[in-house]
Image 1: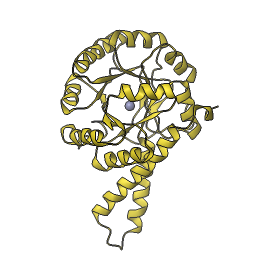
Image 2 (image 1 turned 45 degrees about the vertical axis):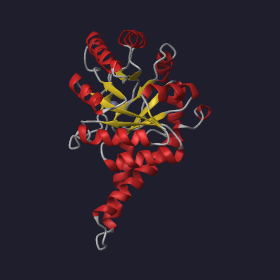
Image 3 (image 1 turned 120 degrees about the horizontal axis):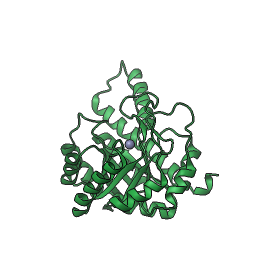
Image 4 (image 1 turned 120 degrees about the vertical axis):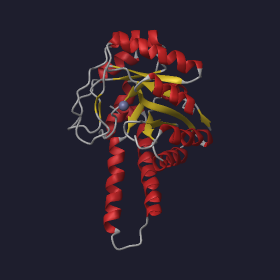
Length: 287
Ligand SMILES: [Zn+2]
């Protein structure tokens, strides 16, 4: 239908009370599986490139495929640079044609994060590209498996208002007990904090580290005001376990690599379909 900025997709989702997954699409199997599923369900989607998770796949090679997939999809698709670390990577993403860039200055002092994010917004908006900023640090890691070991710093609602007003970001990633990677037991999410922030800013809110939560939790976080759901680790594990079983059972068969490609696409698509249905359940299911 259209390759659009994340703001358009997320503003509609916020208004209508559902969540939109942001899925890593750093290789063709992930990309094709995600788009196939979204088209089958008829749901919008955000496709992300993360240089930390797939450093072997250069942005300039995969980005054109992501953009082309978004342009030719029969649903609305946004493309985003995930966790842009500096101005150079943001500028590369804009040149590659992404509709949205994330600049992550969350490890910087508040004023410096605002100053640099504002500069990214100025450059990106001049190209018609949306910007996601992050305030308060989301801990954990999606790169190495293991339970979240870096604890985040929760987002302050007053600072969130000032940050969005002064930077002009279109989407804000917040920290309220969420962690990248795997959770060690049930996460302790501060949904009152999400409601407090969502009640005071118009920009849609993003939850990073949203994978592997109990099913009912998604409706709860969406009901509290989260619109963008960054989801990776749980899906990557499920697909990997499934492939491992198939490969282990295939020792004496004539399974070859292109069968594995087809299977990988199919598994990413089925996991994406499951997630899309989960995020589009009515808010009333939450509590
Ligand atoms: Zn993240």
